[in-house]
Image 1 (tube, helix red, strand yellow):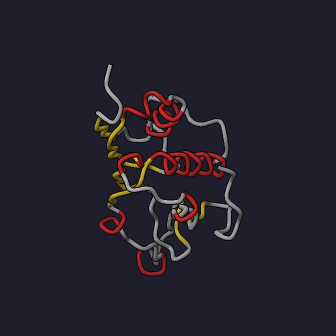
Image 2 (image 1 turned 90 degrees about the vertical axis):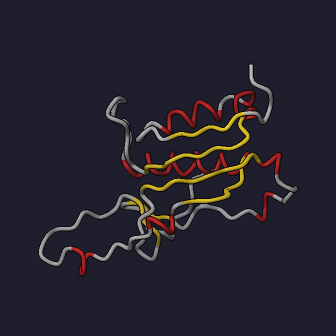
Length: 154
């Protein structure tokens, strides 16, 4: 088998990342082998090869945010493509004559991080920082849930 902190995992599985991440998070042994993790994230999307979630989109997104919160306990973000993908949701400008599709997830300012790439490094490789000082990914709102709604428990 692989030694601790010996693997670089690159994941671009078009919606299957949530099931894969959940399975990884359930294995301390597998998580301990990951040195770096690069992945693409798709909120509210599931792969054609998997069954559609049997929960509301609200619960699906809440579950996905919970998975990211769990990753935060083991890894530190070292980069994202959020700024590259930054395309504000401006229905009055982008589709004045047609019905716009509201993004499944968006920040309070209207930017939709529905899909982006993120790079992590295992927290064991980073100088110690109190977990209380790490930012939480909670400024996102999803359809039917105001951005001021409380986060699901972590």
